[in-house]
Image 1: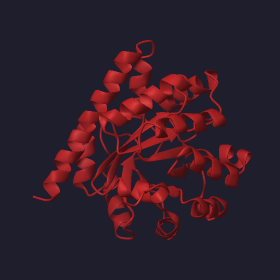
Image 2: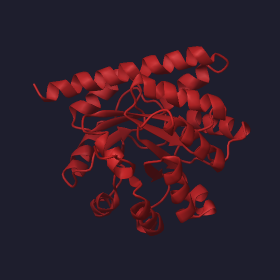
Image 3: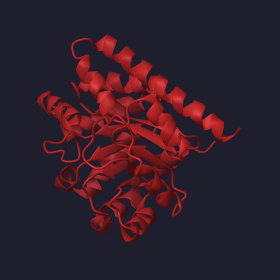
Length: 274
C-alpha cells in the first residue's frame, strides 16, 4: 500500500465530504493543545487545521484572536508549534495543515519553514495573507517538499484571480463563505453557493467551505450544495474558551461536537448516492 503524505494525504481525505477542525496550536497551553487535537481526531476530524499563533491575526475575529493571545502568553513559539505537530503525528495519520500568517514564514525563511514543517509531519500550508501574485517562493517550497499549498477564495475574487488560484492550489481550496473575519454566523451567506459553483467549474481540486460555520444544519447545507468539506474554527475555539479550567469537560464537549458535525456531513453525503 502506497504511503501518502503531504498533498496526496490531504487530497485523499476528501474522497468523501469531510470535516476540517481548526484549533490554535498552543491554546490554552502547549500540552493541553495536544490533548485538544487528539480529541478532535477522536471525534472524527478528517483534516486537522492548526493555527500558528500570531500577534496580529487580521483575518480572525475575537474568539480566535483571544486563543492566539492565550497561546502566546503560555509561551508558544514556532519551534513549539512544530513540537506539537510531532506529538500529534505520533498519535494519528490524519492530515495536518497549518493556517499561518506570512510574517512568521518570512521571518524564519520560506524554505526553512517548509522543510521543518515537512519534518514535523505537516501536510498542507495556508498562508492566509499571501496574495497568489506573490506566492512563488512558497509555491517553489511546496513543490519541493510535497506539502500542499492551500489558497483562499472569496466572494470578491475576480475570475482572473480565481483562474490563477486554481492553477497554484493543491490539497484543497478554502472557500470563504462570508465577507469579514472569522466567527460564528447565524446562517450561511447565500452568496457562498454561486462562488462554490464558479470554483467547481474550474477545477477538480477539493473545495472546503469555512468562516462562520457552527452547527450541523450548516454542514448539511454546505454538503448539499456540492462542497467536498466543511471547516469549523470559531465554534471549536469558543468551546475551548468556555471550558477553561475543566479540561476533561472540554475534551468531552469537543469529541461530542465533532461527532455531531461528522454525522450531519455523512448523512447528507449519503443522499448524494441515493
